[in-house]
Image (spheres, rainbow, N blue to C red):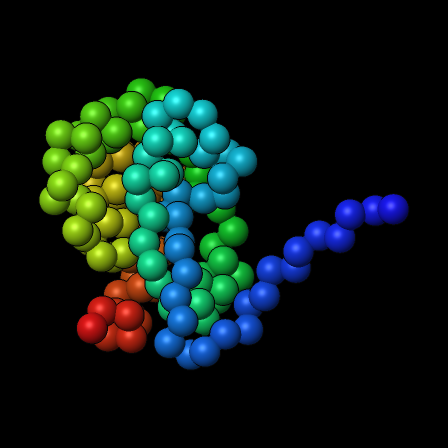
Length: 123
């Protein structure tokens, strides 16, 4: 008999949040410094915004390894401060510290998207 899979339920109260990885999809950000960076930049966002973001932006391009390694090193040097950043500030930090053009375009999209709804998730 086949094992039943759990279905992800997106329906939830309007004030519910879930975790958003600023560096996604996970299958691309799965090794070494890229994986560590992905796991370091997770922020809580409203479910409805999270769903809509992933409908509009399907992937954040993986920059070259030397760029992710350098950003990870800088993150670790300032971890305590960076971990307090909200989603917009965290995305801005990634934009500023990873100079890959395609990566920056995806971060800029997230910065603008979440900044437009900042008052909804930033009490």
